[in-house]
Structure formats: structure tokens, C-alpha cells
Image (tube, rainbow, N blue to C red):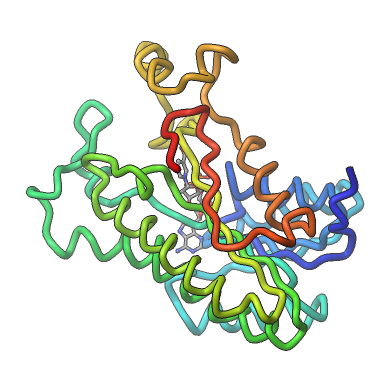
Amino acid sequence: MDLLLKDKVVLVTGAGRHIGREIALTLSQEGAKVVVNDYFADRAKAVVDEITAMGREAIGIQADVRKESEVTAMAQKAVDQFGRVDILVNNAGVLPEAVLSEMIEGLGATFASTEKKHWDGTIDVNLFGVLNCTRAVINYMIQQKYGKIVNIISDAGRVGEPRLTTYSAAKAGIVGFSKALAKEVARYRVNVNCVSVGATPQKGTITEIADEKLKDWFRMYPLARGWDRLGVPSDIANAVAFFASDMSTWVTGQVLSVNGGYSMVD
Ligand SMILES: NC(=O)c1ccc[n+]([C@@H]2O[C@H](COP(=O)([O-])OP(=O)(O)OC[C@H]3O[C@@H](n4cnc5c(N)ncnc54)[C@H](O)[C@@H]3O)[C@@H](O)[C@H]2O)c1
């Protein structure tokens, strides 16, 4: 099936590794021109190099999604380079600092043990980052009467995840934002949808799952028993490709969980 993404311009935030990288590569393989954003310039550059090595077009832009001025400049640069932005994938996200600093057997801190200073970082990237990046491109999309916004959330935001309370709040906030925005901008042919991710581990990071723990995790993910694995980045990228393409023209304000059956939300 041709997803008709040829020459569409896509901006993927946090695209320097793992899920964001896979989204950038997948949309590029479908013919899109890709703006690869990351907080770390070297990560963005490495993905741009992969894309250009495939003979496709991409530019890397270092910007912190928390910083409105950097994000506005990024959108302008993308338009200067490619003439438009058709698709925004708000992928950049972080787990709470409290998880990193108080990790006990893979678990984060309870809400009762945290204070506002622990929450700000999580909300800033996961929620304000999405608002900043969306604000930076939305008027281009309105003017061109075309756009697709795909927000990467987490099942933590749909069903709640203990010890990830602020992260859950930020991701749930994106859902409300996406639905409201979807209703505002539908008249301009702009669609806004969310892809909700379940455990998609990555070696050498906080989402890595030790082998001995895998069996426990498998019990929570019905399809893990069938396929002998948890989520992989291409699972997410394939769903994003659907929402980024005109295959989903009549779909807006929706949330699709890509989670091996972990949660089944109506
Ligand atoms: N991996 C999982 O199991 C999982 C589960 C649920 C949801 N998610 C969501 O999927 C998305 C991608 O997750 P991932 O596992 O690939 O994460 P990751 O940490 O591997 O990659 C995220 C990328 O975003 C970049 N980034 C972080 N803060 C940024 C900022 N302020 N500005 C610009 N870039 C920034 C990082 O540098 C990194 O390259 C996130 O929104 C995450 O919340 C992931």
C-alpha cells in the first residue's frame, strides 16, 4: 500500500534514538523529507546520516522542546529548508527524574515521596514540549489547510502507572489537549491523534528489562506470549505512519494503544 507520504515534510521530536529514530526512518522510507530533532545534536546527526545514506532527504535540528524560542526557530528552519511542515510527531519524552534518582528494583518513587521540584522536569518535557512544538507548527498547517499531528503518549496516561504519577498526568494531559485541538483545527484539514506506547525496552537505558524480569512482564502483555517479545520501535512507527498518512483522513482525536494487549481501553 502506498501511504502517499512522498515529499511530505515531517518533523519528529526526540528522533535521535529508539522509537523516534524508528519513526524518522520509517517515514523517510515512505518518501517523506524528515526533520530530525533531538536535544543532543550528535544523536540527530547520526539519524540524518542514516537517512541520507539511503538516498533520502533529512536535516537535523538540535532544540530543546521545553524552550519555546528554540522550537519556534526549529519550525522556521524546517519551513526555510523544505517549504512547509505537513506532519509533526511529538515523540520527545522522558521518564521522571525521581525514577532515575530513586530507582529501587526498577521502580520509581511514589507520589507521596516527591515534591513539586521532582514534577517540573517531567511535565516540562512531556506536556509543555508537546504544546510548544504544536504551537510552533500549527499556523503553518492552518495556512496550508493540511496537517497531521501525532502525539506519542504512554499507556501510563490511559490507565495510570503507580510510581509514574506525574508522567501519567503529563501523558493523559496530551490526550485532552489532542482531542480539544482536533476539534479546533479539523476545519483546516488538520488531524490530531495519539499513539499510546506500552513497554518497548531499549538496551542500556532505563527501559531495559533484565532477562529474569522478562517473564513477569510477559504475563502483563498477552501478545508477548504469542510472539515471545515485548514491543519494538517498528510497532510504534507503523502506527505513526498510519496517522501521518492520508489513510487516516477521517480519523481525528483518537488514541491507539500499541501495547501487545497490556491495556484494552474502550
Ligand atoms: N520505550 C518505552 O517503553 C515507552 C513506553 C511508553 C511510552 N514511551 C514514549 O515514547 C517516546 C519515545 O520514548 P523512547 O523510549 O524512544 O525514549 P528515549 O529516551 O530512548 O529517546 C527519547 C529521545 O528524546 C530526546 N529528548 C529528551 N528530552 C528532549 C527535549 N527536551 N528536547 C528534545 N529532545 C529530547 C532524547 O535525547 C532521546 O534521544 C516518549 O514520549 C516516551 O514517553 C516509551
